Image 1 (cartoon, rainbow, N blue to C red):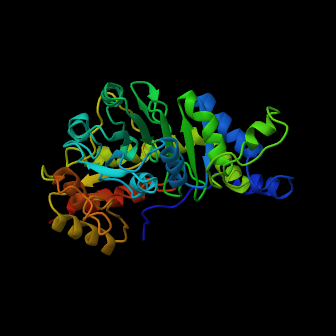
Image 2: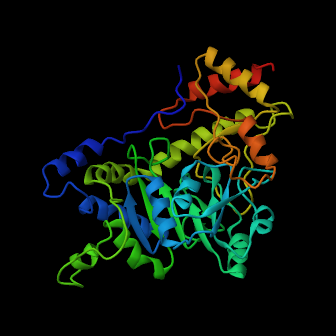
Image 3: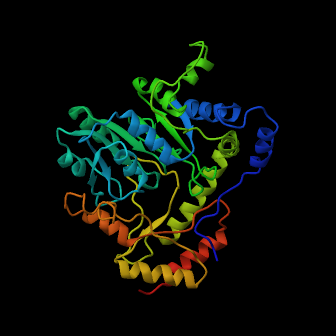
Length: 373
């Protein structure tokens, strides 16, 4: 069976983890954490980076920094992972789910603007498959209404919007280093602040509500509890594994690009018109996080996935609509979100991981091209 995903190990991970075992700092915010922070801040120009134990934790930091009050509203895509919404629900907000666009699963200004009310405080944008939403339009809309913008950049390492790195445009951002992502440490994430007003409190939230970071910088002679917070920072073992991956970023991205383009060259223009392939807007780059097909119906997708499985290829669908989930269906305002439902029913993701061979890619594409609904 060709798996859907196989986490990549560059070769240095175990060596760096061994270094942590023999160091004086295992619990987090040590040398490997600092190396990772410096990498992202220097390469992408993020103002402040804080590694987290997951992308979910990074989103929870974003939600806490929005300082939401009961009754406040946050606009979130319905076609996303539950963490994009639950972080804000936990802070007492009401989530208004936005539909996806017609060309790709990202949300658009046209779907966001009608949802804005005097109670709206923030917009969460998800760059699906590492392909940017139209951030100039969204930031202009947010500025017009005095709203915060949180980039859920879970898929988006090393991807750009008009030359600007994703995660650097909104007021805050969250990345994921889950094992399914381009760069991984098993479970991991990162909070990013691009607005100076959030940095000091973010450090406090990250350190369990204490001003410990200021103590280590010599700004105070002792530290104490001064705010809410949690144990968001990961151990040095996670950071060491992540650092080994970051050192190989160019190699990993190059291999993923080769796989993505081989899929695309084999399938684009050769599938029936009832199937659709990924669309890349002219303002966005591709970080080769995912290759997917859109089938004409749920029935065809189910048939295709079963066909591939029977021939030794594991594929998977993606998100179920959050607005019609068991947890939220009675809280949703009743609007139909047809594009979201269409992606949920028809999108199928193909295997894409570092060790996938050309022969395996060719096997997968030949199966798809010979499939008869």
